[in-house]
Image (cartoon, rainbow, N blue to C red; front, side):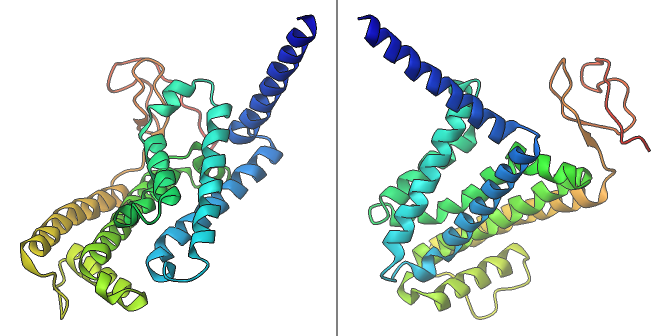
Length: 267
């Protein structure tokens, strides 16, 4: 019994060390942690590129091998992030975790969930909410571009999600690069409301798709314009109410009046 207790204690100790190591890698600010976080971002971008290219390469003989390899990477990343978290339950409740779980399901069942594969590009939105991504940009002095970057990523995510939807449900008969380019052409023309040229979607479903795409697309363009042209604000969570956006010279939180101590750049 004592030997079993010792083995159990060693296992718990090993798990604790693993969690501590992962926590330092995912959330640390050391050079080694930043290198790891940068490598994770590059891998994420490669995965997103695979998702975008999926409609074009899904008929190739190596597609399933690539699909399951990406599934293994996504699963490993999800498990590692859970182990690195101080509050696993809170992490599981976040929308980004739900999106990653759904993406993993589509990767593990590529044939059964083929019609929902276009939603994998939501991984780009999840990446844009990554604290590691913005910590890296802050190191490069690009913190002021955070909101504009969010707006650009939201717009790109929407463009590729709609492109995947249009390709899946309207252009599948023209499978391959040509069909995907047609879907992308239609999406960009609809979002920018510059006219449809020679490509339109048939039937009531096609018209409704165009209407929804235009409404959401215009809203995202307005959001992008606001992020680019309105006065820059700093990101600093208020200790009292959690409001994150404040004027650069704010002394009190405009929502609750709490005294703020926003660090400056020494300029």
